[in-house]
View (cartoon, rainbow, N blue to C red):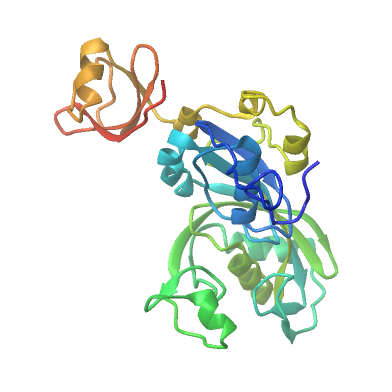
Length: 318
């Protein structure tokens, strides 16, 4: 079994002069990221297990958070941007009465306030105020930039700068459990939503302060509860032949499987793969589409005003 630390050697043994063999891998793995590991550490661990030449993750999770982290391999990385734009679902536990510098359990305590006696009706009335479109001020501990510097770098230096509020959508916000000093919430939200900020704002509206004590991502874009996730331990224990781990991958087009599909004939495929717009029978009248040749997935197309399909992102998967 491989070590559980974040250090994964490139070679099979320390001091080896041979680089690890890398191979072409294409597809998407739904990783169940553990807590206390950054998204990049998890990505590098998976990349080495698959011995993949190219891989990237979509939608970073904080070290505190666990759950769904899609890892795109090879040509599937060309579709990662569409997953970054997708809606997400979380299960979050809020610790009331304590604020931290980072908005989660990893930060230093900066404020403590008493928690008023809250009925379920009080909590539900407060949650109702946060459903739908709301404005959020991004936290200082975030990867956003101010004059070329990451906000979290400024925050670590004790510097706070003004941040413009951003409009996000909270599609669903449901109370799962409550106790004297904690709430557990199910959240479905748009891209760009900061769960730490949402928890802090809810706590303030309840007459106290709060922070995220536990966070788990349950869904992202098309990948919900019907799709299996795999932990690092499962991957490490899985057979490691050339294609054994590959059987756990989803096809690249699953990332946009909810889009309309367009199928091209042989001639149209030739022109489309060389950058030309083509006509396709039965194509929708607007928007982005999945485009297929008779025998394979070609990539992302967009419907032009004249009804033709132009290529936007081509994949080279045989």
